[in-house]
Image (cartoon, rainbow, N blue to C red; front, side, top):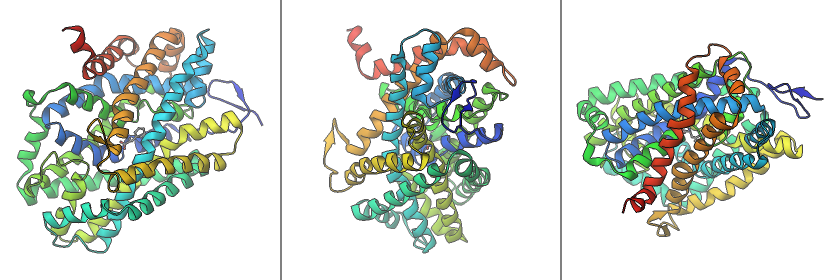
Length: 465
Ligand code: PHE
């Protein structure tokens, strides 16, 4: 039966809506808040020298992240379909080339690449739920947790098992559809994670006496640490953490009711996401310093520090188990969002049912994920430009593809879509700051992204030689 999309086009596939503004906010926040905040932000900040990186990160969120999130939400709501079809439809409406759908394709490819390694890390988190529950962290010291982590990575079979479990969890929810699966999971669990992080920050502060050094590390910018690579890392991390440039916000926006203010929701989501990342940093760095671990220790950072805290605290087994369960849930609400754009496209394009689409795309991503599993052990000495296979995938998807796709969505909303259209979308609900937004998506965000990408690729240095 034909249904109406948010844009009043008749479409021939079933298209659900979020039940409310809150539904969208929760789902988009569930997508944004994930391993990116708790696992990735601290270790990338640590690798890039702390304060200067954090400052750049905040700048990227405010100046590029918020306007681009608004742009993607409105492209989705206006287009009413998957990223690929939304771009195609809106471009056609403006008499522009259908070639714009390539921007949607690029977003979908990025989302699937990210999911392939995201699921492997989600698998680590599942393994840690069991470690915590079995009381393995009890009284453990830094070298003990270090070994636990490196031993886990050395076992491809175990990593593959947890990667498979995580992918299954993801597929199962996506197969059930937008409301049944996605919305419900987030409502209770995200606030709980937030509270638990707050408790962890307090505990780390009280039990290590390293809170001030940690805060100084995160918030005192040391300009000597600024490099083109750090700027690129900060921008890539902002896109990754906010789920931008991967078609997710467009796909979720396509389920967004008309009476919701895009400016207010996008801002709220960006603030919540950033708060969680900063809290994670404040929970982890006191432990990093207290245990003598290097801030630049890399992807294992949280897995090599938090267990020490859990092992020391009263009730640590329970607390640690709860924490890793919530980490898995946070990762899960992000991974379902990573699968959704491709599945939505299959539904529209081929009329393949949601169940079948979810299983097909999920199987493909699972297979690609095996590459990341192996890059931590059997293939650990395979390096591409000095990076492991996992690091290369992450670098390509997060630092290059996401910003490029975000740039395209800003240009699309700022230059391709008619002003009346974007104005109308942003005026719904409480429309605030239209002219600032337009300035941001037409000039500031594209110039910012282009400068960072060009300078880190060395192109600008070449020009001025
Ligand atoms: N934002 C998610 C996180 O921080 C990851 C993600 C990236 C989700 C890109 C969707 C798109 O964990």
